[in-house]
Length: 240
Image (cartoon, rainbow, N blue to C red; front, side, top):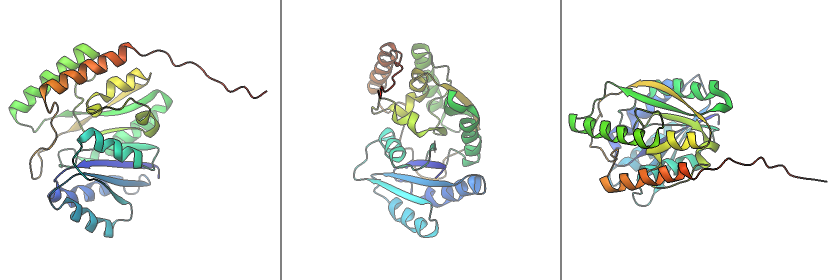
């Protein structure tokens, strides 16, 4: 597989079929790809809808968590299961438009070894006014402390090389800090403007800072990781 599309979901039964169709429409004819849905402990009909869709699409896979473990864990499970060298992610609620996936994937391919992450940057946000203010404050505080140069880390539309992601230190909340952690490894970030749209149905399962104090601790932890980073030594094997 050249590209793996990872979609973390929890209780998104009504959004499964329409989003899969949109992903296929965006990528068919452009890349060899697979779609990996990570069912994060759903208690609705998400598993059944995915099983039905898998009967129609041979490139669709479902990874299931026995209990809900959060978005970062779901993304990680999907990336670990991925067969593609390039992985792209998007949220499963329909707010992230798959039409932008080709731009993100191309940004990784065209960036060569220097670009480790292509990050979607939302315009025309469709969230509530309170959530927009919450995200703006969180993004401002994060950028002031981490100086990651990214105005919107909450967008689920991202693409990266699989080995880059798996080399990052894992912790719950990792998905919120990918630009800072990818920069920590010496890579550049490519930015792609994407248009936000309303959720089709259901309610939000994952927030930008699910709990205030956990968000603050995560921020402090990432700051510490960046400060403690040392240059990776050049290592060669001596054979004789």
